[in-house]
Image (cartoon, rainbow, N blue to C red; front, side, top):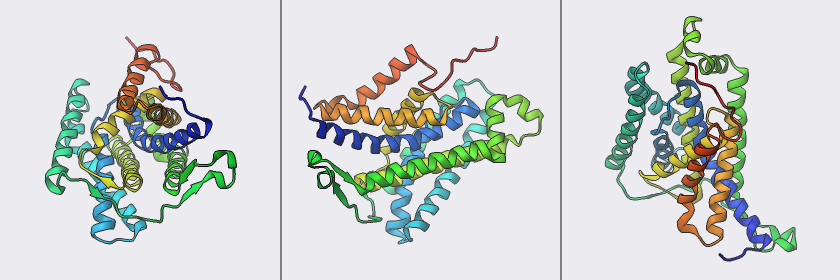
Amino acid sequence: MSSIDPGELLQYLINGLALGSIYALIALGYTMVYGILKLINFAHGEFYMAGGIFGVLAIGTLGLHPALGVLAVLVACGALAMLVERLAYRPLRNKNRIAPLITALGVSIVLMEGFRVVFGAQPRSFPQLFENTVYDLGEWFPSLEGVIVQQTQIVIFLVMLVLMSALSYIVLKTKMGRAMRALSFDFDASRLMGVPIDRVIAFTFFLGASLAGIAGILVGMYFNNVEPYMGQLAGLKAFTAAVLGGIGVIPGAVLGALALGVCESLVVGYGQSSYRDAIAFGILILMLTTRPWGLLGKPQREKV
């Protein structure tokens, strides 16, 4: 392994935080849906992919103002998630858990191949929403010469923090959030108490897919291209992040995602880029075998 100096280490940390912020926005959707339905929605990564492609269509092809285009993408991704929930998951809600799990895998393939057929398999260039200014930290700290921070990285990290805070407010302070927490605590008792089950679950899917759609836009800005298969691996890594932090715990999903992003960046920095994906899933296996409730989760006993 090649050694790295402090400046290089800081650069890899900066890159890892930006990557982890994208994983965090996807992981939040995983953790919300699992918290209520105990469903691992493996199709969730495709809403992230849809956000990127819808962003190209709305802002690049249709020429919408970036703010209006982002809003249109949020609505489109949320509506797509609500449609999937209504057609694929709701009929299986009271079935054995393996049925919706397999269905989620099928929905993932249908969405992925559907977008490939409709929009083509070739990567699309993402429209530039603002000038990506690059800041050299050496201008302020001579010892950090060569360490750069892109404006896009700053935007990604700040957007993640703002949206995580907004989501926490919705869950903890609003009427819909109280209903979501009630379903998470006791699904059957909530139904008996008159909680509108279908509406709350549909809203949860809408919210989670909207966050994933924003991640798709951000990654399009960051890497300057999107394609129909981009959600498959990113979705699995976001699931790994949610498990790492504690699936069902909002701060845990963010913590796990940032940790995973930094780990990947450090692995690439040490010259082992071919192992970056293996590291992610190695972390998943290690966490499931040693601490399956995650870093911020709490062990739960199954009722017999």
